[in-house]
Length: 387
Image 1 (cartoon, rainbow, N blue to C red):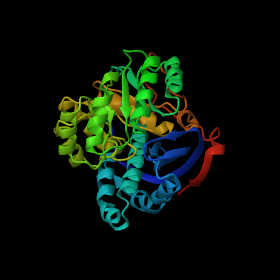
Image 2 (cartoon, one colour; image 1 turned 90 degrees about the horizontal axis):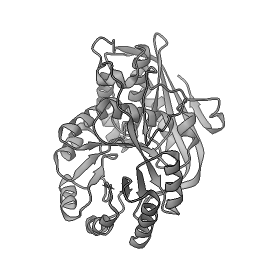
Image 3 (cartoon, rainbow, N blue to C red; image 1 turned 45 degrees about the vertical axis):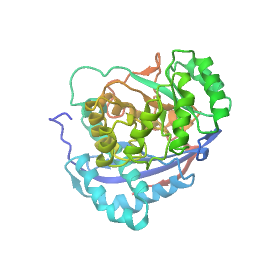
């Protein structure tokens, strides 16, 4: 962080916007189908009128976006608005502590983690805008050099005719790809072969099982898929499997393992970063941590010699925030970009990112450097709640 920047703030207003756009085609995973694309955005405004944007993860359950927005209005506003905090990190830690008992009482730790994470993104965006600095520069401590271009991969390639979408994304300039698996050995193998034939033998190619298998099934699947030259196998088993289970899985099948989007808290991340099973760490800054938590996860990941690849599957604010997170952390790896159509990706982050040879270059625009086009999105807005 740039030491000369004033990071203290007092928030006067939190606005919440809920969007839903049709998913055509629907997004398929091993555990469910998204038939529309939701997004929950937060806009914070401080006492001097500075503002920032954040995004809350809200893909599942399919009815969850409106609920998360109401949780922001009910629980975050009273704890944040009108109170002074020395930094976003201090605010993140305070809110996490104050909401811990409520998380136990209502059985919704995920929802509460997610609304705090979305707020954290907005607070960091606001501070960077206030300082007239791009957020990547504020997070990385300043310096004159731009970050290197950030490699992206086309994610969420569905199991129905995946070679068609892979070919389309390759034509758009993507150079790395990730296929959904977990739909049966025969179908998975046919899809892997079809995509590999389209993208060529040397293109980086990954798979995501979305927690589809038990341990024995995952071992068999990893061995079966080795011949396709895969960069990683993501979430082959349940996210609550122990680090010891992941270590066993890494030892008994040949593919590099990826995960982390469903981990929460630095202590849990530290366990997996320190163990040998999970080699690619994928925190989702809209699910837990925002920048205040995930920046440290990234730094610890690199110190352990592992690969840091932020997870994201949502609207444009969270995606752009993931670019800035990766730029601030550095190191090898990719940022995930959903390959499926989603107007909320582009319209909620204008100007949209430009892909050049599989990568995006961040510039000097203050904060996240993007603005939601609320006018263009008006047909997708289903709920707005101001202070």
